[in-house]
Amino acid sequence: MRDVRRSTRDWLILLSAPGIGPRTAVRLCEHFGDPAGVLAASRSALSELGLKPACVDALKQPDTESVEAILNWGERPDAHLITIDGPSYPPQLMEIADPPPLLYVRGNPALLREPQIAVVGSRNPTPGGREITAELVRELAGFGLVVTSGLAVGIDGAAHAAALESGQTIAVMGTGPDLVYPASHLDLACRIAENGALVSEFPPGCGPLARNFPRRNRLISGLSLGVLVTEAALKSGSLITARCALEQGREVFAVPGSIRNPLARGCHGLIRDGARLVESAADILAELAPLLNAALASASQSPASSGDDAMPVEALRGDERRLLDALAFDPMAPDELIARTGLPADQVMSMLLLLELNGHVSSVPGGRYCRSSG
Image 1 (cartoon, rainbow, N blue to C red):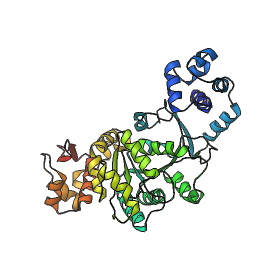
Image 2 (cartoon, one colour):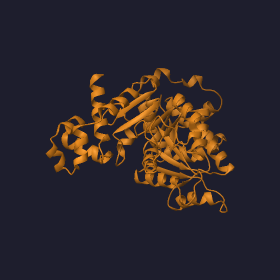
Image 3 (cartoon, one colour):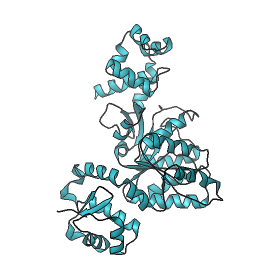
Image 4 (spheres, one colour):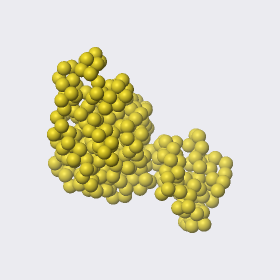
């Protein structure tokens, strides 16, 4: 435990130095081995790598009082400090170009490693936009996806609130983890901390600086398998998140709207540029199925998801048993299953995921499914 605290302390000193951002911190650690190696390096060695005198001074004479205050914050029951070299760091963030070396989390840090769908949109949505967002989010959260958003007013808030009704949600903050912006979402943030997670790369006490929110947006997309945009103007922060998603190799989904609605133009632009058009949660699940399969396989290896706990075939009832009986051992497309069973598309996709999680169904390339031999 002492070693973990010392390692975290080294990261805090490194990241608090002026001029050291995520990329520079990682580059320095690659050069010197780890944060402790950076702090032990000579002034000349640090200067040779281009660090300015003020930065070197901060590394050699750190503000230990501020560092200790953050370490003490991280020892609260609901607070967590997660470093990039620790076992709790979300693996999906390791895939982006500039992963934050340190995350501040309130709530359940394990959620950061779960399959996530990001949902973003306008801060001034139409009533219809709110309704569509809530409907899609309830379905996606009900299927087991963690819903990730940015805690902003409008679509973000609607997504978080709907996710809490049927699942779990993560709020990525543009402030420190102890400050809620906007203040009107204080109650929502408390509910998320209790039933999900608040996450930030900014230390406690950091206020809502404008330059921090684009950095927040890259984490929203980086944590997720894909980004869903439900309403957005042509120039909006939601489109920044969508661009981050494309750069990170994530899927982008967009809900179309009326040509008379200016908040539909951003989504229409995304669709023209290759985003997936979304009319139901099934559209998203079908596209994410290959990525979800990997997450399901990983989950099935954990004690909580072992074969002993899976629901036996004999226990299946109603539509689930009907769907399984319609499924052959040869691969079948979801459309064929929908035709055979007469069940709605979103219900079929939902049940296929649940049946796969319980080991009764296997997915194969091409978005098709077959009955497992077991």
